[in-house]
Each structure stands twice: as structure tokens, then as C-alpha cells.
Image (cartoon, rainbow, N blue to C red; front, side, top):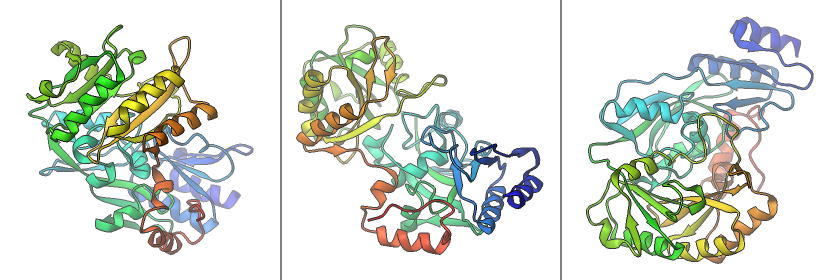
Length: 387
């Protein structure tokens, strides 16, 4: 261990921190080339490596022996070219989105945890988020990535090979740069409406989906989240404000424009800029089963709150937390997770699966295994799941 630590200290100077006892050592690369160098050194010594972005999905990253790659210094943004931008992995999504807005552009899809999560971290997991009504999964809106491989190579990945990296949770290479697809923001204007019952909300969402209204994002939240103030019930929010949206509403009332902007500003759930972040539990239900799901949740688990996003496939992503008596959001207990999953299954849905759990059940799982064996034979980036 002393030899590898000495080599890392020589390469990274003060940006190498040696762990004490069972704690991992860490390095903080400032360039993609330095990420590749750290992986090359680690592979030569058989040292396990854990990439760490913002830390929102890596609660166990600091446990055990090995090396943490802290990627927060990789924040470069290239000039926007057409409908794409190249960015480094450590930049937070909300910071990138703010930069793009100054040029009249927006990311096609980004996570609701944008204030806390980094570009590389969410690319490593993939998922649905803000913008998925129009554009689907994050991985469908990536033109290419550059990954650092354990041997020290920087490799460009695009096309059908993206599914060997995006969503692989860093096990096949560390994402250091990505080219993300963009959209124009000229028509963006939020709309929000309040509904007294989950059935009325669900019928409206189903009508919007059936009409294929040209929205970018369509989301909603439980009454207890009070996105638009007390007493407004379930809240639907979307952008742009489609002129025909009112005709699809079933028993709801449109909120004033100022309130709609405030609701839209609350779409980052539950990741604010400060404070402890509870772990979300997700479920997917078909849009036609949304009303039944929300009704059962209100009856059988009134302590659970949800924020939902409709995807272009017609699946509704439900992100759920437990509302504590003091109004704070908490991670669901095991029984609550099982209850949420059971209710979703009863409506034709199930668990929300991302990352390796999703990839290992995809048609190209064996291709992923071969790629892993080729680029990381020593498994310093961790093993793939069995099965």
C-alpha cells in the first residue's frame, strides 16, 4: 500500500489524501488526463477505485480500502455548437443549466436532483427526469462520452456503444466528458393547476398524453408538498403552457401565472442546495393506472408523498419519501418500500430500475460483460452483478 500511496502522492501532491485505518485514500484530478493517470496507477497496483461526483448516490464510497476519485474539479464547459454542448463530468446539472439558459438553450433532460447531482454521476446511473415527457431517458439524449479506462486510456464512446458506459455506474470506465443534446427555450412558460382529488389529476394527465400535447415536461406533486401553498390539493405543472391544455383539464383549476412560476421553481425535489438528502424510492406505473395508484397511496400510506413525471412512453415515474411529523422528508422504511412497489404492481407497474440493475436485464447484457472483461480484467472498478 505504501508504494501506491507514494506514487499517487508524487503525481497529485496536495490533491492526494491518505486515509487512516480502514478509510480510503482519495485523489482530486483536475483534468480527464489526470483521471486516466490515477486509474493507470491503481490498476498497476490492483487498487480498487470508486468514482465520486457530488456524492448523492455513493453513501458507501468512503468505506473499506481502495481509492476514491473525487471528480468535482472537472467543470469545463465547451462552446455550444448547434444543439449540443460538451461538458466535463464534475459540473452540477443546475450550474450547467444556468449557463445554457444565458444562451437561450436548455438540456433536453436533467434530474430533479439537479442542484446536488453532477453530470457524470447521473450519466453513470441514467434515468428519467425533467424533460422526459418529450425526450425520454437521459441516455437517449447523449451524443457521446469520453471515458477513462483502467489501463490509462481515454476513449471516445458513441452510438450503440453508449449503453456500455451510460448507466454502468462507473464499472466499465469513468466518464470524464460528455456531449449532451440541447433544446431551445424561446417558448418556455410554465403552467400549473390544482386538483382536489387524485382521480381528477390522473384523468387530466391521461388526456394530455392521449392528445400528445407538445409539452417538454409534465409533472405533479402530492398535496402535502404544498408546492403552491396550503389547500391547493394535488398540483400539476408543465412547460410550455400549451394553449389547448385547459381543454384537457378534468375538475382542476389553473393557477395564476406568478404561482405557476413558483411551482415550476420547486421542481427540484427534494434536493435543495443544503441539508441532508434522504434517499428516494421510485416506482413506475402506466399512465392509465396513475389514478388507482394515487388513490391507494392516499388510503393505505398517507405518510408517503410523491412527485411524479410523465415519460414519453406513457410511464409515470413516482419518486416517494415519507413525510415526518416535523414536515421534513425521510427515506422510506423497508415495509413502506414494499408497499409502494406492491401498489405500483397492482396498477400494472413496478419498481423504478436504473443503473446496472437495468442494464443487466437489457438485450446487450452479454456485450456489456465482454466489454468489462476487456477493459477492466482486474475489476478495480468493481464487479458486474451476477445473473
